[in-house]
Length: 187
Image (cartoon, rainbow, N blue to C red; front, side, top):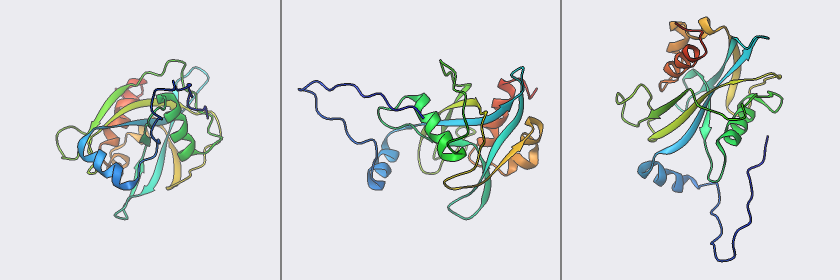
């Protein structure tokens, strides 16, 4: 993983705040400000660069439901988006995933999650979040970590199947279908 850039601070500038918020601070921020996130759709590609497999995480929600999910997480203060992508991919898929982040990462879409269902296809009951969504090829050995129970590699067609889509929450199934359309695997 790459390190976040550290720039010298001028003597008259106050120190930067910590990148970590307490649970109370995060709750206050979530009630007042949209929070920046990333979503990553991990894929395997063949020699010509065509997507052949999609990695979906198996997670347990706070209510005990088992769901399929994409890699996702917050972008920290003073963290580059590419560093957030690398950090969350490593957190969920392990340090040997070997993600291939392009030199100039461009999201395939911007997903806006609202705490009120029905405003967009994306819903997060905790907050208003804006997520930059990426398709990220991974070349290494992926092993689920943190709160992920398993990682399943499915063909794009299997991942977009209605039964798999029903296992995804918060609009991530819609995001997955957009990703596959973006790479030409869903018409």
